[in-house]
Length: 195
Image (tube, rainbow, N blue to C red; front, side, top):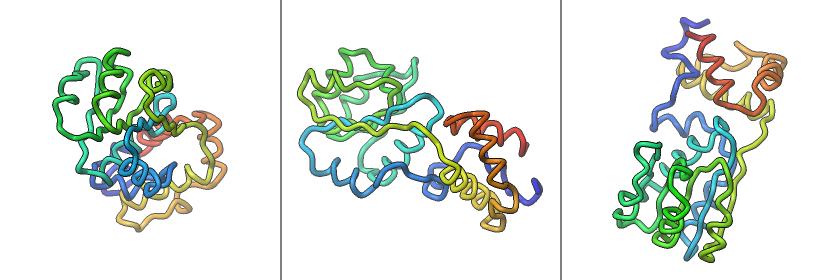
């Protein structure tokens, strides 16, 4: 079966392929409308590592691509780069790499900040009276996992392979039992199986 794939279906995904593999946890039109029509707003994608926050952030930014995305790490967390950008809406991955003081500056300076976090930043928003909206990334169902895996298999095989050719529901239930709601854990495991 592995030879029927053009690439490992569980490898990282290119920006242009995001829309083909994502199963959104939110209504894209509703979120986009909130972003465009609100004077001051912070939207957080909250959850543990590996739950799909960054994938969803990249997906949403791709839909609203006139606004920049900043992917922060310990070594690239530079608030001035974000503040110097003239956009009033910004996407920030891993906002926890900024200090509390820096987050306050960011929330004051930008009309809308959409960000990923492991811990809620609600109180930072409350301090400056910024409207706050949270989207939790927690939990997993066989149906959603099935859809994600099916989309990845189809992308890697140019739609010639369907999930029923490779998996049964019991396989998916066992993956959830082993990895819980860690999509990253499941995909990393499947990546190794298809190497």
